[in-house]
Image (cartoon, rainbow, N blue to C red; front, side, top):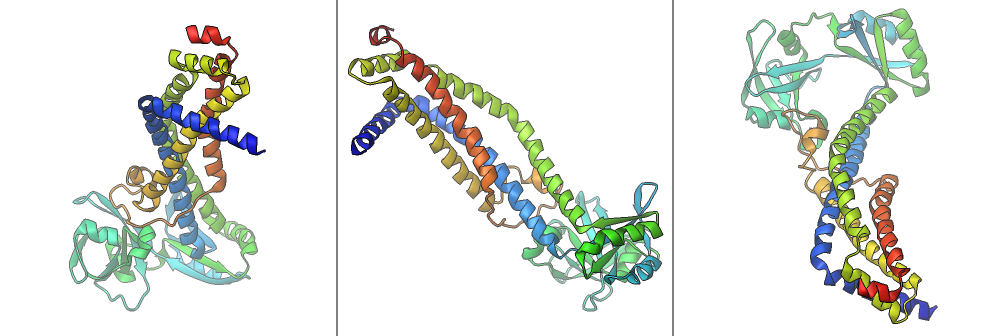
Length: 378
């Protein structure tokens, strides 16, 4: 065993020296290789981290949300529905919610507006998200003006800026008293945007949803699990869209890597011929090429993953946050909690390391099986 280890170490030293002798060519290959792994790993890290954040944020979401549809569109829910739903067995509480969207043409931004029942938020005041405060260029105590449904201005005093810890979900949020919310959008007092239903036993949610749909055919009950699946699908779709766009670059790299790995130069063929003439076996040559391929591919994979980790979890992925976060103007500022999916990282390893390493063995085997004299004369 010690002899085998010494032999392998000697071949490894020779492989590293061989790579350094052609450092210009290998540096170019390593740079492109690392860039491709960096982009792919960044997408994997970012998508998994945002999905984890979404799951944590939605952990406190209501078990069932009841909406009303009219002509295939969401419509207001009569508050009388809440009284009937509250009487169902297993329902712990029913909370009407008022929320909507407000477009500010001056800044080209959409704000999420929500009514608050907090008594500490008096009429004529508002709490706003950090992203909204940056866009509107306001701070606590300033006035903001919203244009109501009747084209009349609604003046609100900024009572507070929501903490940065909530920026993932509250970056574009305007929190208004219920009276001001209804004035802004002209909502009737006996209707709400939807109903948030809390139940004692989550396993009863499908049964309750079926009862509500039977009682009110225009109702659309949405389970908590369906909301989670929707968010997963959205982020998977966004990540997949970027991957599809990047496939062209990956294909170009694959062609480049194959050309570099599969085409031995005359100098390399002569080198293999010399090694064979001084007693190297074909297995030694294959091990040499395998170690060369592993040195390049592993270095590129580890470098790309480390750079991707810093790009996503230290700098919040500035290269493609616009495509994956989903906000058009109001981008939330937050640092993602590091999440590494072992399965996806292993899959990335197989796709990034194995093909290139295998590609280096084919030309090495061909050159090793040629007569040494013919190889040195080529």
